[in-house]
Structures are given as structure tokens and as C-alpha cells.
Image 1 (cartoon, rainbow, N blue to C red):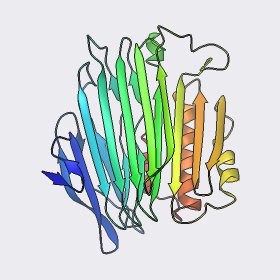
Image 2: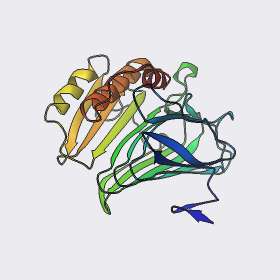
Image 3: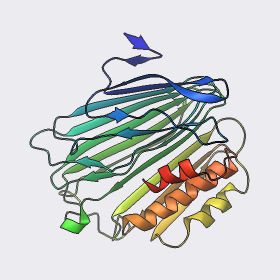
Image 4: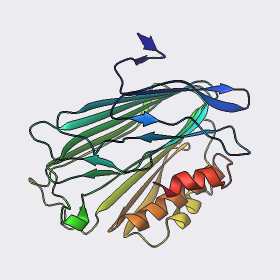
Length: 283
């Protein structure tokens, strides 16, 4: 059975659609290791805010997890997760998560999952693919730490293979992939991770109109000075990529949250409200 291109084999399936002035979760299905929450709403917005929760200790070697999210015409959803994705030591096989997202005509998705923590000996492959239709908008956050640094496990994992793909009206506009194998390479070297233990990438595609000319300056100001390395670059006139690296999670988190708030205000015309602030601060 398929629904809007999705299949019943997914561990998590969420379909959002517009109902009057607000977005509703029209269809939802989840099985281990995921659980979802019913959407909640800010007073002046029709955006559906929701969590994706993984109540298990983490991914194990051999796990194959699939997430499918679809936003139908005119829908607006903000999807977050309240706790980090933990990847435990792999015995023989790697763990893998694939996320397939469809953003229909006129829809807006803000997908800001929590960061990934690969434990010592972990092997993890993650791929996020977003298909955007005409006049749609997508904000995607992808970030990870190099391990449980407090336990001396920085870069103690075996492999971290991560990719993010954004396809806009059938044309790929972002294809970002990196593979880290700490046993084979020295990533603390100059020009690589050096002393950084946190890396975050934020992708924005606004396939409606050109981005405000002041947005890049606003993002640069929001990045602040807490992080060791940060930058912003444009993807044509409708896209933006922000990268942040730091030696600890709190300063990177603060920079990422500030950037998201700037984008929401300058691109989506959404001012700060209690619900999105609470979700962002939980990342």
C-alpha cells in the first residue's frame, strides 16, 4: 500500500495537510524506535509544531530505520526532537537511517532534529532526501558531535556516513555528503576538524521569491562569536547554507537557534513566540 509516494514499511510516516487556517497531521504511523506527538499551535499561527521521539537507548548495529514525511499543498510544519540521536557500538553491521521528505506546492517545512552522537565503535549511515515542488520552502538542520567527549570518546566511532540532498522541482540544488573514518584518517589535523567536536549544517531553500538581500548580513550577525568557525553562503538567489563548528555543544546550539530565528523572521515573517522558542531551546 502506498500513500502519496510513501509505503507501509516506514518506521515513521507523517502526512500534513492544510485545514482552513491551520495545518493538521492528517495521517500518522509509527513503530519502534519512534513515537510522535499530536501537533500543537502558537496563538497567531497555523503552523503545526510537533516532536519526533526515540524512547530507546539508541540505534544498534544492523538497525535499518526509514522516516517518511509529506507536506501537502499549503501545509506548514515545524518538526523537532527533544533528545539527541544516540548510535551505540556496532557488533558487526552498521546502523542506518534514511529520511524521505516531500514538500508540495506552497508548503513550508522546518525540519530541525536533534544532533547525532556516535558512541565509541559505532558505525552509522544517515541520508536525508527532500523533494520540493513549486513555491515551497524548506529549512533543514543536520548536526552531530564527534562522540561522548566527557567520556574521552571523541572520534572513537568507526564510521559516520552522512548525506543531505535537496531536489527543487526535479533539479538537485544541494548534494552534501561526508564520510568520517577516524581509524583511517587523522581529523584533528590542521584544516580538518582540528579541536572542534561539534559540526552543524543548516540548509534553506525558499522556492517562492528571492531571499531578502539583508538575510546574509542578519545570519552573520546571529552567528556571534561563541563558535570557533562559522560561515554562510548563498545557493543562487533562493537558497542559503550555514555551517557552524565549535569545541562544545552549548555555543554551537546558541548560534544555530539564533540563525533559525533570524530566518523565521526575515523569510517566513514569523516573530518569536513561546512554542517555537521552547522547541528550539530543547534541541
